Length: 269
Ligand SMILES: [Zn+2]
View 1 (spheres, helix red, strand yellow):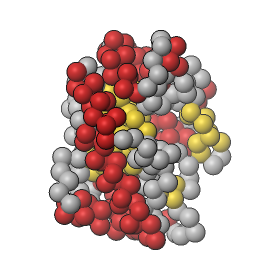
View 2: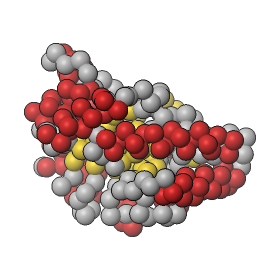
View 3: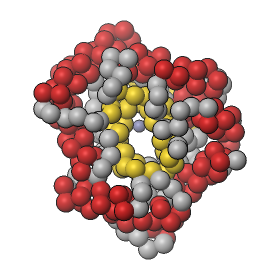
View 4: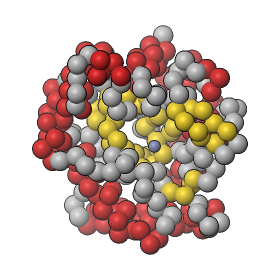
């Protein structure tokens, strides 16, 4: 069964009187959702204690937790390999305490390099990181490499698929259809995308509408902002043809849980 849920907390979550993410699993179950993504995008500030409470709540309410690793990870930057390893390992440790195993990671930026050079750096960094995680005894985890929304970032679908092929037991794509729609300037070919995903039995999805300009992504909007949208009925039809263990996360602006419900209803139709 495909799981649906938000990244972060909806304005309705707070309007209903909740204050902290430890209350989210109970609230999400009530709404009828089954997944929840927690962002360490701006830093890893969660304590082990909080992670334990969220983990217990998630288990009690049937919510699968995923985590988004810090945005400042850039695997193309070889000088930062040690730091990047630490951020990924720490994120995975907290994720494990919360009972989840999917860590969303942005691969990196091209910076002053050629595309090929940057991609090669990312590959080498991933090889080192996967080896060290093994040495450090980490198992049962997925690094979900995300398709990105700006041309300057490494991570179009071809690149993400190529990187994931390095280790199909620990790497899977985070297919961010909103980002991909930005790169395609609104002309994404969904059939082709899902065709390319057939080699992956499980995929992590981010499905939101995102405003774009000539450089790509500008900002996340909501499913009501249809001028930046794509064909959700077709997405759900293609999703129903997949094996079924996918997770769909909404990163809509402010109403991510309400939009998750919309996505789930499209899927069930
Ligand atoms: Zn992301």
